[in-house]
Structures are given as C-alpha cells and as structure tokens.
Image (cartoon, rainbow over all chains, first blue to last red; front, side, top):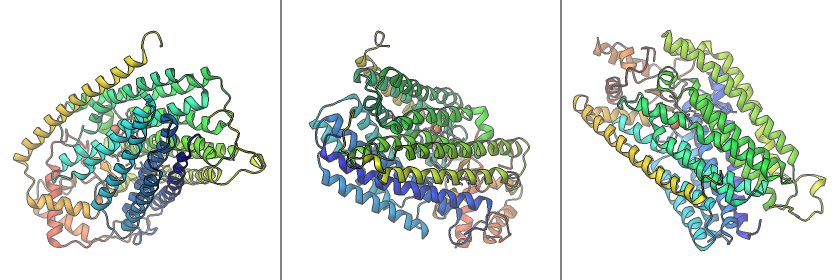
Length: 447
Length: 149
Ligand code: HEM
Ligand code: HEM
Ligand SMILES: [Fe+2]
C-alpha cells in the first residue's frame, strides 16, 4: 500500500463482511423454513426473509466493489484519492440506506419485483451514492495515470449505475416489465459486473505473480471482449418464455453458450500468469482465492449456466431448483470470491499485518467452498427430479416438493458448513494473527 | 499471443465489438417491444389488470411464487394459474375459487408450507384475478409444458 487514502477501503470491507454474515444467516432462515415450514411462518414469512437474503448479497458485493476500487485506483493511478471525506460520507449513506431497507422489509415496506424490492426512495438514494462514488473515482483517475485496469474498472462501474436506472422503470405490462428487469439483472451479472471482476483479477495477478503489465492488460481486453460480445445478446436466454418473439430461442441459445468462453479464459489467464510469473508472494491465501475465483466462476456461471441455457433444455428446467443451484454457485464463484480475494490481499496491507491469519483464511476458503459446492449438488439433484416429475410427468408443484425434502435437508446441512466457513473467513481478516506478526513492521517483499 | 494481437488492437476490437453487439441488441429489443404493443391490442392491460399487478407487487408474491418461471421457487407457478383453475371453461367458478383460496390462507396444516394472510379487499382480489387472467393469455411459446406449471 503506497497511498494513505487507500485506507478508506477498510470501511467498505468491514461493512461488506457484516452484510455477508447477515446474508448467510437469512439464507439459513429460509433454508429452515423450506424443511420445517411452520417456522416463523407468521412473524417472518419466507418472502420477506428471502428478499433480505438476496438484497444483502447484492449490497455487500457492491460494497466490496466500492472498497476494491478505493483500494486499487490510487495505486493504479499513482495518486491519492480525490476525496477521502466524500468516500466516508458515501459509505455511511450506503450503509444506513441498506439498514433502513432491511428494517423496512421486516415491517413489510417494500416494492414487489424480485431483487429490486427496495422502496423508491432507497433506489434514489442508491443512485445518489453511486454518483458520489463515480465522481470520486473518476476525478482520481483523471488526475493520475491511466491504465487499462482503471479504464475497464471505471467502465464496469459506470455501467452498473447506468443499468440500475432501469430499476426505476416499472410498466403495467408484465412483459415489458420483465424485458427491462433483465437489463438490470442479466446485464449486471453477465455484463458489467464481469468487467469489474476481470479488472480486479488483473490487478491481483500483477501484484501476486509479478507478470508484466502489458501481458496482463492484453488478456484483460480479450476477456472482457468475450464477455460482452456473448453476454449482451446472451440476454436472450431470459426472453424465451415471457411473451417475447420466438427468435430469441436461437439468439439466446447461441450467444449464451458463448458466455462460457470469458469464464474459461479467466481460468487460463490466472493459471498462466501464476505459472509464468514465478514470484512466490507471501500472501498465499490471496492467490488461492484468486485462482479459486476463476475456477468456481467457470463452474458456477459457465458449466452450470450452460447446463440449462439451451432453449429446449430451459423449456423443462426454467424456474426450478436447477436455477437456484446455478444462482448459488455462480454468485459465489464469480462475485463472492473476487471480493474475498481482494479483501484477503488488501486488508492485511492496510492493517499492516504480515502475514496475518493466513492459515485460518485458507481453512475458510475450503470449508465455505465445500459448503457451497455441496449445496449446489443437492439443489441440482432436486432440480432434475423436480423437472422430470413436474414438467415431464405433470405432477403438481406441492406434491413434487414433498419428494425433494431429503435434498433440502442436505442443502441446509451444507448451508451450516458454509456459515462456519464464513465465520472463519471474517475472523481471519478482522482478528490479528498470533505470534507471527508480533513486533514486525510491515515489510512487504512484494506489493 | 503477443505476435498476433497487440494491446491496442485488443482494445479497439473490444470497444468496436461491444458497440456493435449493443446496437444489434437494442434493435432486437425494440422489435420485441413493438410485438408486445401489438399483442396489447387483443389482450389490453385494462386499469384492473394494472391494479392487479400492483397488488401482486404490494405483497411481494414474487418472493415465494414464480410467474412465467421467474421469481422464487417456494410456491407454485402462477402465470397459468387461471388455466389450472379451469378459467377458460368456467370463468366465474375460477374467479371464486382463486379468491377463496387466497382468503383462506394460512392453512395452518402442520408440516405444509404456509402462505401468509394478506389484508386484501374484495376489489383488490378481483384486480389480482384479472391480472392472472391477462397473464395466462400471453403467448409464452407454449411454456409451461404441463398445466401443473
Ligand atoms: C457470474 C455470472 C452469473 C451469475 C451471478 C448468474 C446468476 C443467475 C441467477 C441468480 C439466476 C436466477 C435469476 C432469477 O431469479 O430468475 C440466473 C438465471 C439463469 N442463468 Fe445465470 N448467472 C451467471 C452467468 C450465467 C451464464 C454464463 C449462463 C449461461 C451460460 C447463465 C445461464 C442462466 C440461465 C439460462 C438462467 C435462467 C434460468 C431459468 O430459466 O430459470 N448464467 N443466473
Ligand atoms: C447458508 C447458506 C445458504 C442457504 C441455506 C441459502 C438458501 C437459499 C434459499 C432457500 C433461497 C430461496 C430459493 C427459493 O426461492 O426457493 C435462496 C436464494 C438465493 N440465494 Fe441463497 N442460501 C445460502 C447462501 C447463499 C450464498 C453464499 C449465496 C451467494 C453466493 C446465495 C445467493 C442466493 C441467490 C442469488 C438466490 C436467488 C436465487 C434465484 O433467484 O435463482 N445464497 N438461498
Ligand atoms: Fe442471464
């Protein structure tokens, strides 16, 4: 860490970790309601707990992206942040907005579209927060060095804000509503978020492997090119059965299949860089998360996405537990892991801990990843059975669900393991390590 | 890779290609929107359908149910619930059946998933049913494959 203002990232990382724990706790709540349906059914209905689970996820991932940007942009641009104070004000506004939304949900104050349940005033507050953030980082980049990493990161972050504006559009026609709802949801996770992910990954590769910037940045352009060329028209895989024309079955199938390519390229990229770089960076856990991120994203988004993306397959699996299985592994592999990777790299630097609770952090990696993987398998099996019984044989939904309870118990067990892993991760990042760092001044052999 | 492709070339391909695919996408979506507008001529979004959609959102039904396969997977698909209640053959009975079902929740049956009790007026219930009826008439390319949803 070279610039004092990078420290502001710590607010965001801390906030993100708190919300991460909350997300998982609410995941456990809804996982429990599924197997023991009378749990809390009056006090905290499934739908309310679910919106807290998913919204907490999205908000903490964004908070992590903000923190990552505040950490890496000064270093890339080789200049202090435009305004640290603005970044702190922005943090509190965002956190208070998120807390207000959650409290509101508990009192049934919400809108009614999946993932976009925030009341209008919260949505507008999010826009204000985003503008403060974009202004701050854009001004920083403008006064400093311009690299491909900052360019693409900025493009991704501006894209996030621009596509979020479609959340304000809620027409009375359900089909129109759905068409543009996906401009937020799909064009986020299979579009602009991938730019953010790839640029953070590129930054980590430069720092951790020591490979030449020129090489890394060329890879970066190739990866994000693959991502957007496939991902934009790949939106078609959500336009199969919602009242839109039949040609989307072709466009969606072809282009969303190609969406596997950028995720595969990220795997090749990270492993090549490590292999070529040959630098033994002391922060092994950060490297583990970076490699884990590309691999898990490839499986979660790439393989599990492809599994149900061809129109004839999606006709059978659409909106079953297969979707839930994919949603979990994709979000975890791509966006949870990139966030934990940059936190694992940056937090010990900011806190001047060397090398901190590294082993514990790696335990957190393996336990959490195993938990989410097992959960994904359980849901995938549930989804296959569900698709067959409900979509091929035509059995009723509730009747089919009864057949799935074993899988739901396994999911809950896997969820408990996930929770334990998350506690270890948070602990390893927040609590100072023993013995190792005593009396040592942060001597950082390599950035 | 270094020989075949320079960084500047990779960058230019990225920007050019992205612009190209985005324009194609916007064109196709514009065309789809025009077909939706045509469809509204035979299946208009009446004030009660629009009001029904707001009732649907007010209670966040989407966070338990799917509609046209999108939403949560805790409770049955409702895009075709009108058909499942036989609304195409006997509209009056389907309407009453749906309204009574909603009013009688939660069932309180031990070990069965519960739908909450909602404060919904008679008018709102009718709007909601109109919204379901409208939705069931959308051309979804024959999805879902079975009436079970
Ligand atoms: C990191 C990237 C990705 C994330 C975070 C992600 C996440 C999700 C989530 C949460 C949903 C459910 C949306 C809903 O509630 O309706 C979904 C649906 C879907 N995703 Fe992804 N996804 C990613 C990448 C991909 C890729 C690359 C593919 C294709 C190769 C894909 C194919 C699909 C399909 C076909 C659906 C619709 C499922 C259905 O019909 O029910 N996804 N995705
Ligand atoms: C303790 C661990 C977890 C449990 C028990 C759990 C449980 C659940 C449940 C029951 C649902 C609702 C599915 C439905 O609508 O029927 C859900 C949705 C969701 N969860 Fe989790 N979850 C956990 C962890 C996670 C993690 C780590 C992530 C992100 C990486 C995540 C992301 C999501 C997403 C994106 C959805 C919406 C899926 C969709 O619409 O397709 N959850 N979760
Ligand atoms: Fe998608």
